[in-house]
Length: 268
Image 1 (spheres, one colour):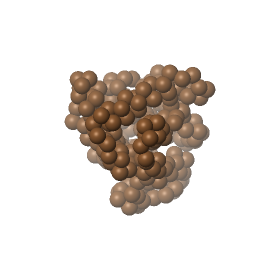
Image 2 (cartoon, rainbow, N blue to C red):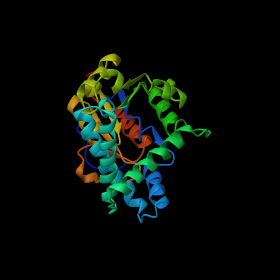
Image 3 (cartoon, helix red, strand yellow):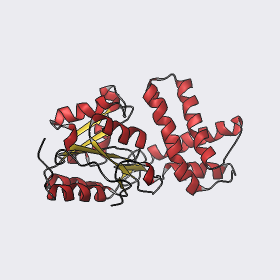
């Protein structure tokens, strides 16, 4: 495990681990930055894919900001396109790719079309363009064996329960919570609170892990939970974050089980 900061001691042993869904349990294939790089190549636009990978964080922060103000799915179609275009523009700017409006419109259309193509493709192990990280099932079973509850908390435009079922890990979860069905988007504490209430777990006895500091880390800490930042691709400035940073879910489970073995005080 790679820790960017010392964890605040918990007031209770961990009884529940909650997981972000996208880029935590599942990932687009190919990745967003590879897809965008392919679009730029198709338009003969010079770029550095490694910079697109790190710059993806800036674009995701912008998406979180707009989605927090008002769920993007609830906005008019024209406004959604404006936000998505700005998302791409900010992303490209991180890699010093600056284009005019006409070219930006082409990038947008090709990027969306490429995504739709991936969704429709029938590829073994891929559902709507997504694959499950190989560690997910073993990690969930390690937690279950230790008597620790497992839940998904996802910002999504529709209930992700069936989606998780198709990806063959829904049965490993004690609860799946989707923002669209609850009415609150991470980092709103209410979406975390409803998860805790349904599973009968106090905030201090739970930890949330995800790849987004602004939605996953902020939301969990504001709820009184612990949090860990998942950084599979080493894109984050680790010293800038006040929670443990892990490179894998296995590392997170190692941390949780090690703390339980040391005998955290009972209080849940």
